[in-house]
Image (cartoon, rainbow, N blue to C red; front, top):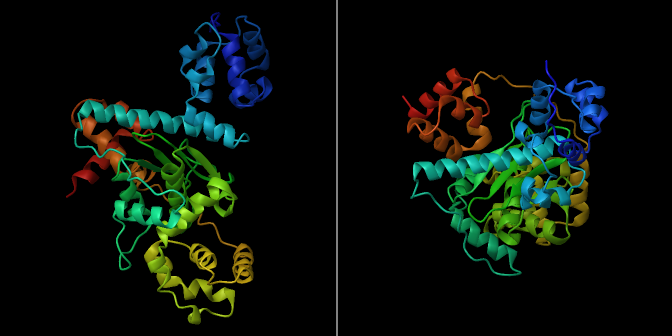
Length: 385
């Protein structure tokens, strides 16, 4: 096959540097001879068009990106939100960088489809004004704004997600299987948000316990509302007591467990052994959609729990060994886009398909490359009996 002469070597070199990958590593990853890549980097005929497409897919670029003349203008390639996250976590993996860019493109698709459908009644993201330096009151205002209900209301990840999406944001949750929408299981990253005044996006890592996902969701919402900025957070950030992470953690705690909820817990009923805390707080955990630790942290911050007891519980919990559930069945593959992208995004894609604004192929691509038969199943699922 004929080699391409017009590859821009500077752009290929820039992509390698941007993803912190050497030509040798790229060669091994894509199974392209290193001699071919080296010739291309030297401005000679090195690779075929099929090989160029593999490179373009790997870096999340179009093939034309590598054929254009001139150097890369980073401000045009990476959004301010992407650069914010990359600066916060310089050690971000190539996989996560690709995921962030993929999420940005998915949001752009969503807004474009809404515009084509002329959705004039769409809820704009217009949160209420919040007081400065009063996180409990800010959380109370947002809880009312989201309509999360009172003490008797049962909440979980699904209800929190639905409430936030109803206010004009997107909430994605990474899938559990190894795919392009997964936050790798070995990654410490638990979630991130891409701030945007019109349509912010929150991305949550799928975990075995939904209560952890609820706290991460509330934490990222805190960054959006309190700091009006993009953020990417790992396990350490969820325990931080410094700066903006401390504020986001406090906001999440008060949003999920308001003071009036906390007042229903009887300190006198607290077991002596920390191994019994999960059983002690089981009704509240299930009703509020939070973990035992979130409740204990609220009790700690309210001077109702000694620091030593909280530390003892954390140490005990960290020593537990949990069995992985393993890879689940993909019998309901057609519903996976709903779990990953949320109801609002899926309804918008299906609405555009029904209005013939997009083709089946486009709809499939927007919904995690869903097969056509699965796409039709998804349509039937939304249509109901």
